[in-house]
Length: 347
Image (cartoon, rainbow, N blue to C red; front, side):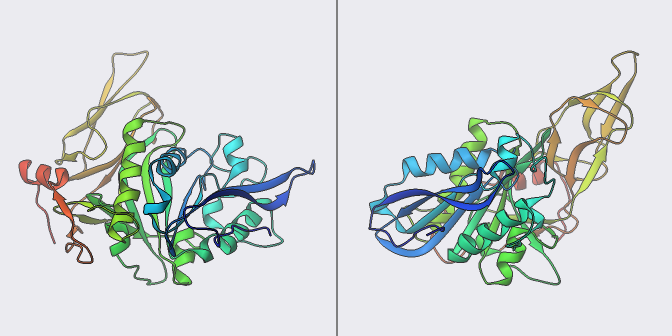
């Protein structure tokens, strides 16, 4: 049968392939998967990564999860698809270079569409529909380092519940308008909450971000009772809306002076652009008080290249604490910086 089998024995771990299409040379296009069955069948947690082929952090995090978790101490089932977009992954690119379609704009897919549309169809119907809930791991694009955070995407006046992204235990939760065809938007329409978890940067593996992804997933599992333990939550979780891009005003080399996750004040220097040929510099400054959600890591820039992604606290909201389960509270670095820098937080 060409779909993941969840009806397996307690403590069993199984792997397989779901065929989606064939290439011009006859080779199959498949989605590899793992299933881990615990002492109970439900809930079913879907963990997927690499909807965009160069987004690698989720792949490493899922491997670590399967190594660390004892299936006989698991309450429920984990269905993991570490590399959904295998063609893009092989090309080391965001999208399949032949199809050139963004998989995360195509859900629920088309059974008889292009290869990427068929991947979307098979993943949505044979993985997503089996899940109770899920975590969809992403990274920033190449050269775009993101602080770990979930993205709550709204569409057509939808109102996704915040309990699921909060359960990851990050300090910042990003709330913004999504686009038709995104996985979490289409899954929400059929009543399956899928959390988009953004972390790190495409094309790189860094132990810190792998650990942050692993910690977020295990927090989620602890909170929903899938594994033993008390989830760690920041004392304050901040919901922020939208973001601004800070562009380069000249070409040259960008030298960042802040890190992803830093709280900064208006006119604070975010970075310096220097010309490789002339004794010329441009100081990139913050447009307003806020937090750096992402910073450029690739040094070469042109005029107009985005060097930082920035969110203000104007529409910020401190979220109520989670109530379903007892949690271990840890100090919030973000909120501490807000207070230390004297940044006004409007609610």
